[in-house]
Amino acid sequence: MLGDNRIRSCEDLSVTLDSQGGIVATLLRAMSEHRWFRLLARDRTTEGLAGSVEWVRSPETGLWVQFDEPWTACAFGQHKPAATMLLAA
Image 1 (tube, one colour):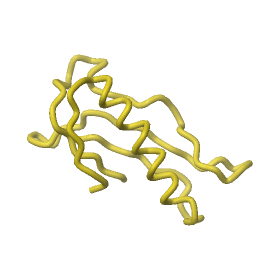
Image 2 (cartoon, one colour; image 1 turned 180 degrees about the horizontal axis):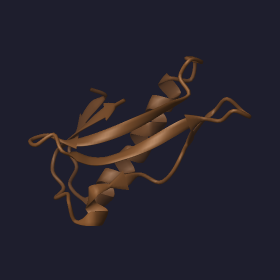
Image 3 (cartoon, rainbow, N blue to C red; image 1 turned 120 degrees about the horizontal axis):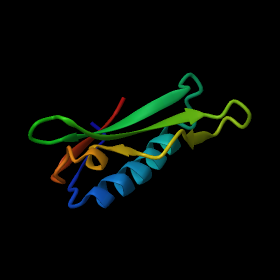
């Protein structure tokens, strides 16, 4: 488990995925064997997936870049913001 954050809104969930992804990318900077990672946000009580974001290592620069915008279940009306656990996978 990477961290335990209190998420109060759907916007908080996207922002948290963005910021925590940057932190993980910084931690993995020196580890050359990793080419990608996915950060998952799960609901604390149900452990259902609430959101995710994927980062990849750029083959040109070797730097971590966010592959796409964070995905959240909020966009589909599936997630009522509550405390979530963030996991790196």
